[in-house]
Amino acid sequence: MNDLELKFYDSKKGCKTVFQPSDPGRVKLYSCGPTVYNHSHIGNIRSYLFVDVLRRSLKLFGYVPDQTMNITDIDDKIIRESIANKVSIEEFTQPWTEKFFKDLNTLNIEKVEHYPKATESIDEMIHMIQKLQENGLVYEKDGNLYYSVEKFSDYGQLSKVDTSGMISGARYDADEYEKDNVRDFVLWKAPKEPGEKFWETAIGKGRPGWHLECSAMIRSIYSSGVDIHTGGIDLLFPHHENEIAQTRGAYPEEEFVRYWLHCEHLLVDGAKMSKSKGNFYILDDIIAQGYNWKEVRFVMLSFHYRTKLNFSFERLREARISIERIQNSLNRLIESIKKDIPEYDFSVYCSLTKEENQESVIKKITNLQPSTIAKAFYHDFMEGLSDDLNTPKALASVFESIKSINSLIDKEELKTSEKEDILYFFFQLNCLLGLLDFETILDSASVSEDDAKIVSLIEERKSAKKDKDFARADAIRDELKALGIIVEDTKDGSVKWKRIQ
Ligand code: AMP
Ligand code: ZN
Image 1 (cartoon, rainbow, N blue to C red):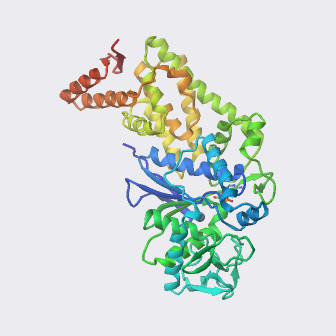
Image 2 (tube, protein in one colour; image 1 turned 60 degrees about the vertical axis):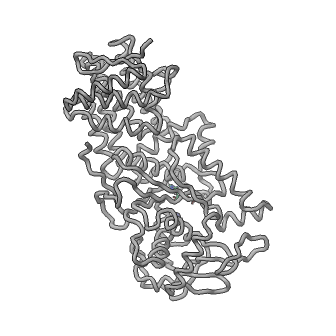
């Protein structure tokens, strides 16, 4: 079992705190996603990679994520651009939405369970506005509906903005505004420009303000709040403060978010990378310059999500060297197992790189005896992650482990069974890194559909034997035989197996 406690820095509490989900079997996770009107720049990508690290880490700690990332497919910018391009907002946003998913795929960012679109969540948003109206928090001006911030006494609890200088009834229609200017924000906007997209609804003609979608989606997907809500630090105010005001204003009795996590910005030459400043890089440009996605992924992982990251091409070059060091150590380990047992069948491992088999890797490595060397590497790595997803700390431990692994291989001081355990450490490491190459070195030609099952049966048989449940161990041996696998216990404790010819 894992004896480490996972801690997060909660932006609301302003300190690190031990993570305890409301239901350990299903961690509810919501992340503010892209506004699909242009390419994602690598600043946006940093925040998506942060979400990926969070998701993968939760799994490493034994949790099952149930995760949402919203797609904002209507806002001021989208309306402006679609009118300028003389296309509907659907036609305008569709290619950008596809591009967003393509970038995620390129970077090996895991798919999450839900990707709701704002334009497909209008009913939930109307319902929330109606609830807010019932609770006396909404007023109308020029056909727009506004949230009356002064009527929500908890306003400012997340961002700690000072509401004392707030001018009663001062409003803002735009989606974004500054912290020193607390205003009533728009929930529903009446159409102004000809050709502007609107919905004909029970609360009038119009379209939602930007802040509303996240509150409404969380409500409709999870019914009563989430464990973790994430976003870039720029979303903390006003967006997340307004999300709280909306949900808690509509449903005061419900807990909305238990832990708020915010990712710091990616900078270029010390300034925030943003489309409005024009100082941005997109993934395609970087790849066109001869760098690859693994380097981008590694650079992001090598910085803690709460520190600013000043982007440079030099960092990508450094990442290439770091990735090579890890990969070379893995290759050497595999070579040395082949040297011990020339007929060793690696094919069973191939399926372990698949997302659906991460669980069996994690189970295997967490169940290793504390005295084993691989378990020590695993522990150091997990310790870094447990400390508010401190990926640089976790990676520093990986480089220390690699030094030991290389030196132990050089000195021929490892038993084959120890090497097998360390191989699992690499698989587990890759559950987070998502960039190591196993396929080419493990000869994927002979992978079968049954491989995952075989691994788990072999593991189960080992634990049965450890528990002295020999009847169960023998039954598993027979089950394996029926699958065409013969197992053989070696003196050093490892299990050899081969397919019946
Ligand atoms: P947007 O598409 O503008 O709605 O942004 C999508 C996500 O990217 C949000 O979580 C933002 O907070 C985040 N983001 C925007 N700019 C940066 C940046 N320079 N560095 C890190 N995250 C960013
Ligand atoms: Zn949001």
